[in-house]
Structures are given as C-alpha cells and as structure tokens.
Image 1: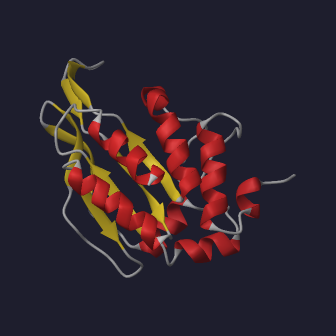
Image 2: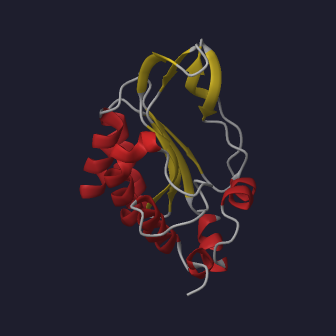
Length: 187
C-alpha cells in the first residue's frame, strides 16, 4: 500500500487519514501532529477531533483545558483548551467561526498570505509561558515543517486553505470548545 500520506490527493484525504490515525486505525508517525500517536491527555477528545477531520477541519494540534495542578517539576501548571488545523471549505469555516463566537472562544484565522499576529499563552508553569498560539509564520513555512511526505495535490490544496487556531480564553475549562466544534460540524 505504501505511504498513505503520500497518496493523499486532497485536504479531504488528509482529514480522513488524520481521523483514522486519531482513532488508532492508522499507525506510525503522522504529519501535522508530528507524532506516532495522540497524547494520552487528548483521549477524551478523539471522537470530536475525528469527526472534525472527516468533516473537513484537518486538525494538527490540540489539547484539553486543565486547571492548575502541581506538575512533575513542582511548578504549578495550567492550560487552555485549544485546537488548530486547516480548512478548505468556506461554509465549514463560517460555521466553525460562528460556533466559536457563540461559545466565547477566540478564533484566529490565517490565509495563504498571512503572517504575524499576537501570541496567546496556552500552557503556563508558574506563570511562565510554555506553549502559545496565534502568531503565524506563513503557509509555506508551516506546510514545509508539518506536512512533509504528503501528496503533491494535497500540498497544493493546503497552500490555498485557511489555517485556524481556536482557543478557550478561560484557563482550565474543557467543555465549551469541544461542544462548539461538535455543533458546527453537525450543522
């Protein structure tokens, strides 16, 4: 069968492969998430993430919201619910943005010529930022770093897609973002 990612001819193909990877039907390293399997902390998010991918929102990074808790290093860690990915379908993008707005989420979209933006902290340890989203290096750089090994046609579609970050502004909350996404893809 070869490399299924290399055979992807569209962003829709990437979404179906990503959903299969999230659900454990496709093993090994994956573009986008750049890992062999989803992190354990996202196990409860897999149903909504897989549905998003099959609907056309190809997710490449996500995390649940987590309230402050003492970490492995003795510091107090907290994180915001977050997901990022790629969308080609303008109607789907509109539904996701509207659902995010109704739920009070922050949505940051970048088109093919976008660059820059402001960092929004996603993970902190003792108020020191460990991970952030919102700033954007541009489609070409992100595609070249995250999507190596995919089909030429899928790469071309990504170059014209919208990259979007969805962030719950409330630290530790883990229910609104995911239900808003589920509603948007059911519409």
